Amino acid sequence: GLPARVRIHEVGARDGLQNEKGTVPTQVKAEFVRRLADAGLTTIEATSFVHPKWVPQLADAEQLFPLVSDLPVALPVLVPNERGLDRALALGARRVAVFASATESFAKANLNRTVDEALAMFEPVVARAKAAGVHVRGYLSMCFGDPWEGAVPVPQVVKVCKALLDMGCDELSLGDTIGVATPGHVRQLLTALTDEGADVEALGVHFHDTYGQALANTLAALQHGVTTVDASAGGLGGCPYAKSATGNLATEDLVWMLRGLGIDTGVDLDRLVATSAWMAEQLGRPSPSRTVRALSHK
Ligand code: HMG
Ligand code: MG
Image (cartoon, rainbow, N blue to C red; front, side, top):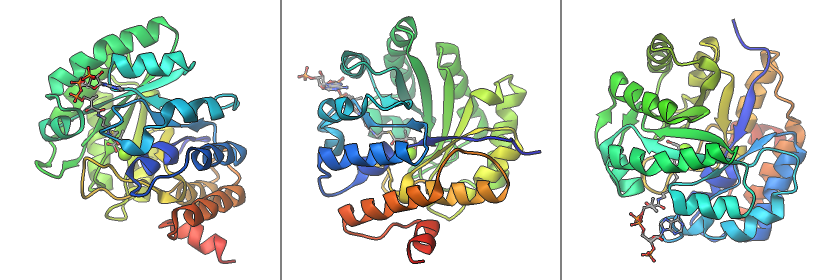
């Protein structure tokens, strides 16, 4: 069966904008987040408190967060280490996300750490966040394939998932960073995780659409009981430290499919399309989302 309701974890303002070549003005980012909330999204990842040299596009996190923090939605932010957590807590963030890798190559490229060193870096972050009553999401990148290492074995992914859950993460997001997953592989990983005792309620999926499989993969995850799906308005995105990654699953494409399945998301598709069309104008190129293109040319 399929769930009656899906919670969309909107990542356009973070995963989407972290990869832009040009600089997006802080005011434009703030308007983007506010419009996403107005379209009915209730979990909107706002920015990252990472090293500004590693992700210059999000170097304005201190300026941006206060411009949106009054919104009545959850506004998770990425924090790689205690320095990032301090910055986020100082601004009143109530939800943070750490981000691990299932592969050594990406751990090095993205965090300048081995997998174990990165987990050790997150441990005090998670502990301190939990002690402050802050919700913690644990991202895991390269759950299916890695640009340097190829296909990633399921047991290797399960091991890092367990480490993140044992550390105290409230939820996990299983990342197909470069978009190579297919539905059978998604089923294998979810089956392995639930067989190991992971609560499916604590699992979310994060698909990039490089090979056009993101929606099919999402459906496979929903059939397995997953109810949290990451998506990016207009299909913005990629990852600066994973060259072949394209944008995330577009939120509009997801909402179109879910609406057809009778699954409630609370999102107003017309407002969302208008927001992505507006953002595409700001960025100076059309949205890659098929649904945005279909509905904005009507
Ligand atoms: P490092 O160079 O090893 O840093 O980078 P360090 O710990 O050695 O510290 C060096 C200096 O940086 C120090 O300053 C720190 O204070 C400063 P100094 O003492 O030399 O003056 N520093 C910071 N400054 C501000 N904010 C901070 C911070 N941390 C240290 N938080 C580090 C290690 C983790 C910091 C770096 O690698 C980093 O920032 N990486 C972030 C990369 C990133 O954001 N990637 C994109 C997000 S992940 C993603 O997109 C995948 C996802 O979507 C899921 C999927 O699709 O798979 C989530
Ligand atoms: Mg991503």
